[in-house]
Length: 389
Image (cartoon, rainbow, N blue to C red; front, side, top):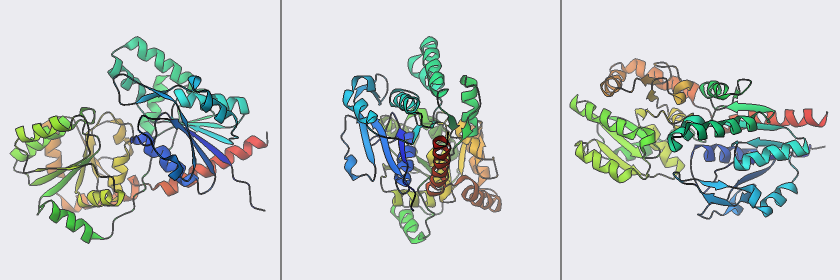
């Protein structure tokens, strides 16, 4: 007799049509878990409408209010009677929260009331984020105290890498969380004719191809990248730098590119929504440039690794903790001339560079199919242990 499918609730404070790292993680979980189980995503209702009926799983939306200083909207389940009633009438076997606020807290309440196992995943450097946005140590302290209190009510806690786990222990968790690495839906591009067409499209000849994918925003250290490119041009290093993405900083960014006389070297691709095309851009690149200190565990570095393209990070950044420098990726201090010199040095030894490319593919690249299968099996274990109590 076939075993009855379990029902999994994923709770998040950001979701489609918004696009960010947490959204993509939750969405990739939901898409794949729906192959094995009943999946319900509890998510905020955003200003821009999204047709949830197209998805192979149920989405329950909560009313939201705009937040000052950020692009996010704040879900307030306590003011949404319909959301609370719908949640109460659903039977969940496992709860997995991806936020310790708003909707995530509702997941905690549900799990406690119905005595079902609950997991939490920690995605961000919350303390730094709140301090930078509010400039208030008191407010940040109170928010973090509340966050830790919520997380301590979950049965298992996971961070997206080991450094983030250390960070949450410093924040006040009693025990260091486990690690659930992020992954990607990309497979290695084997049709290199498509990649060659991109090269022709952008008029690239024998230059080394550098790439950035993400929000064109100061928090991603975009101004630093431009300073490094300026230095590379002065060193007469032959390169083309492709930027894929958009954002509020985009117009200022274009202006700076011209001021630095980098129009010949910099190619502004804009936003690329087609995942196959994006994979081809990663395959085209020789090096992914990601000096962000904001990200905790960026998906783009895994996407790059899926195409045998290694990443150069800011030295000691949280998101760089999944790589071993000069083995499956690179890192350098956030000093313009040092960073530029490192890029030049990377390509001075082709044999070593190609070894790093292969190691990035073998050790940094993880596919969501494999990762979610492991997570699902763990959900099953938790569920079976719970019903035997």
